Length: 579
Image (tube, rainbow, N blue to C red; front, side, top):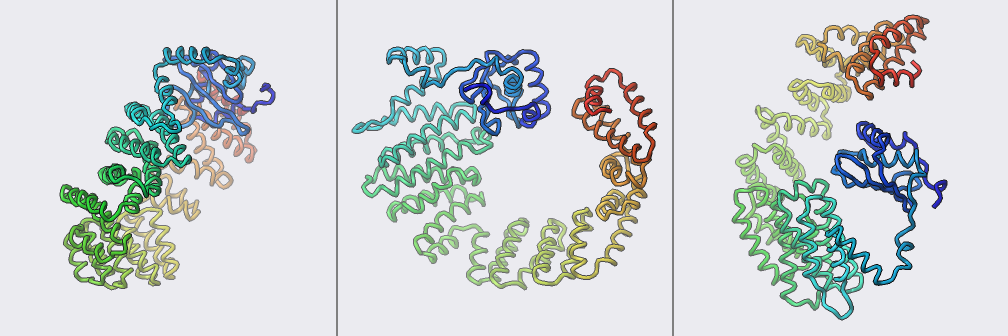
């Protein structure tokens, strides 16, 4: 492909792809000549980049610019790394230095079988990890031959021992793709065997350490694919022997129990659905025995017990046995599950007694219980329960918010306003003030209430909140009155918006505020801060021009330049902005 037909990029576009720090470092790497052996194959760029060691950045381009990028460095803090930035800058400024090579299919088309084998051997000698890919290619199932599952198992175990999450997920995905291919070829028996092996290996390996580095859930996604695939194979398994069915179902159950053990992180979540749907009644007997054993062992863990009991109850509901499901909850369920079930059964007083005894210390759960009472038309009991809890010291804000929302929804704005006032004075804030305004206007009581609030805040010397409110109400004169009374750290959050608001009404004060902001930024002594300072300086210049005091601006900017003679980056930014 000719250079002229390649996507065009600019430094400005590249800058948007990285943090400012990464861009500056990548720019420095490019200018220092650290990009070595740059190559282009169709729309893919790569090179060696000399950093603390030799790294290999790789960039794939498209019509809209960068499509994907990776690098052998450990950078993972957002945007492109400095090595990728250096590579892109080399592409923008020195495209002719890139060695253009044809696609692999063209390069190898004329090579003999012996040549290709020799090439693969050389590659494996240099990069031993490639041997696993070669072995995997030989394990592809052939018509009439059994699947050598041991090869795939070694691949899965090798993948899970790695420390790089992207490499783990990529290697496991290759095995998932093979299983999908087998299923698409209607070879669901071997597909199921591969899915089962993968799910079993991932479940056995997914401990706290692996979970800690799987912060994007990449391995969980692979486990989900394996569980979903295994469920599809079970759906085709009318002639599957009992022993294999048991192995598959045990693996699905192990994944479900692992997810519960991990706290419900949606690890292979479709395993639960497959287990409930495809286990026969006879198979469910041993599944239930095992789950009951887990319930006994986890009696002190409320969440785990709830999840296990819910699994058994959901099976009975799925089979149309709602009465049996209810009996299970009454027999094995936690107090919370029993209380919610009693509400559904209309046994309100018994349910409330359990709630008061067991979970008044859990406001979130108690409010869910109140919602359940509302749904069961036990409205009076729900409101009385929450109102009582709202008078207690602990967590009363949660209950006050529930009551405010309840009275809003049920058309009593004045009572909602009363509860919202309690919330506000517990922790006064601008957001709370806005909520009071909304409710006060609905209750047609806002004008008087507003005066009372502002007077009380003034008596309590809550000047910072009063300033926020004045800004919110666009009362700039009040802001100007309050601003000098604020502490220095409190003033800092208002300087810029205040300066902008008073450019025409109080230009000299606006200039003074902008000067303070510019000086603060310059003193940080880094280029992003200099750019911020330039923005403040541009406002000073504009205000001076509007007031016909250009001479003041000229004197100030000359003084500023002379004050910082050695800050080259600052002078560079000033020159760029024509200041």
